[in-house]
Image: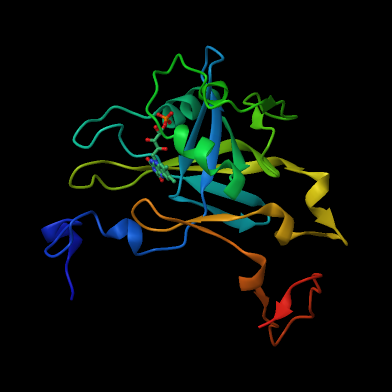
Length: 221
Ligand SMILES: Cc1cc2nc3c(=O)[nH]c(=O)nc-3n(C[C@H](O)[C@H](O)[C@H](O)COP(=O)(O)O)c2cc1C
């Protein structure tokens, strides 16, 4: 089938639910902590998230409106406009339930990290704390917000940040690399579905123009 989303939206017949979220998959989850100007911590997951460049390291996440058809902004949008800082926390399989709990639209006065039962750890170069249990956290300074074109029901904003500090749990560093087996990675699929990245499904593919990175326990594909 073919459809133009600008003409028919994201749920043309026979789809029961918005289909787009299931078409660009798997996606990483940007678990973003911010702090309001008043010092309240916010934490929320964003799968419209990605690393944008490696040098300098930059990342982006895209909050849309709190409710379709409204212009009410999410705390993850407002806080970064006010304070210019955010933190990417790596969500793992083991943290998936806490991650989903932080998707609740709680009032701005609620510390969503604490509400999800997560311990906060301080950052070096930004004020928002990181999730202590995340094996990786990237401290980011806001570079730019790009307003994407208004959609049929919502508007999204791409928030770009430059990484100014990198935390890596020493336990996942092994043999001069981060050990993917120890990080328990999770991927966002469509609808309400997620995947666990299991060791047996990870392969290493040699590129024609590069040397190899030999990571223990990863078989050649
Ligand atoms: C796995 C997952 C991915 C999500 N990705 C996005 C996203 O990319 N953009 C977005 O606006 N909301 C996304 N949400 C919903 C937000 O997390 C949710 O609206 C949250 O309440 C925003 O919180 P805030 O108001 O505290 O910033 C996602 C939720 C989940 C569970």
